[in-house]
Image 1 (cartoon, rainbow, N blue to C red):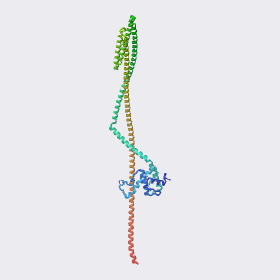
Image 2: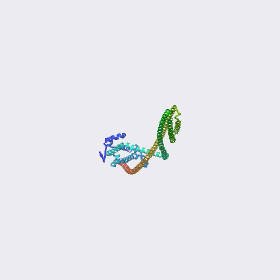
Image 3: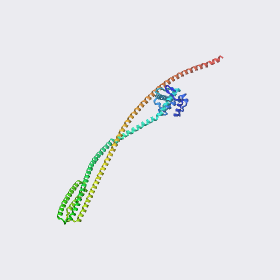
Image 4: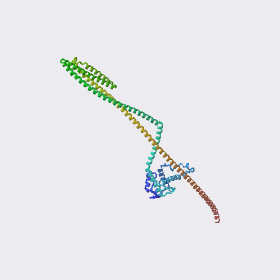
Length: 469
């Protein structure tokens, strides 16, 4: 059923919904099909208070004495609450139905079933709509309250940040970062120098290895020369008696060979001296080279002291063993020097690894500080965006509050004007009623006077009639 483009609900559906939502009303089928003023007033008031979220005393306990100095509880006690309900209900229905349905005083005092059903259908449909959308409205309200609390917390954080002087702390952190960067640059430069020194040491080690190989080759050559001399001494010993001239020639050759050996030893000594000059940083190596030089000199002296005629076979064997022992000692010394060089190289590698670890540690610290500064900047930007959003939300809420205040003020002014008009109308009607009562009282007094005259005349007439009889 449609009433003025308003879709009406079934009466059974209306009663079922109203009793389910508001059991205290106890609405029956007759209350809608044959409405009465008091019952329909309670239904309208309950529905409107639920829709507008008004307290129970909204239309019963209003301090009208403040707005109406001539307020009379006996006269206005029942009329003004209905008038206020009529005003708010009319505004609500016009908003709901897009001004297609309005409420008049007749709907309270002499309600029509069709209009009552249309009004209740509109209110029930809107109430059901509010029941579905209210959780979202509550969520939005709660979210606005939460944002307001967050805004207050943000303001408190901003105040705390201003009091704690965060920019000064950031400047201090930047200064620390600059210091760490400078330290990292210094360590990096030192690491580069260490790398260069390590390469130089590697080149020195390679040169020492080559020199070692060269000296081993020369020692092998010297050993072969000693063995050849030993063979020649054996030959000289056999030919000592047979041919003196040949012996003298052999002695001369031996002297020449001795001079060659002496020259070789001198060359070895010079090479050892050069090696000593190149290895000044290795004190133990220098000492060992000096020992080797001394042993080479002793070996040269021993070789020069060999006389083919005076040296016996046992002495030559002893010298041979001594030379072999000397060669073995030289090999052991070279191995020791090689091990020392390897240990020193390992120490350099350890120092390099330690410096690399320090550099990596400083790099990680710098990255951590940079990340922390980045996070602080992001937090600051996020706080600025949140503050801007909260400021916009705050201004929007202030504008809405001002609009609500303005609309409420306009409604209160309208209510005041309507109350004044109603009061003036009531006073005029009261005056008319008083005038009417005065007129009726005057007429009644006239009737009483006429009755009195008639009674007096009747009393005077009755004795006369009796006398006549």
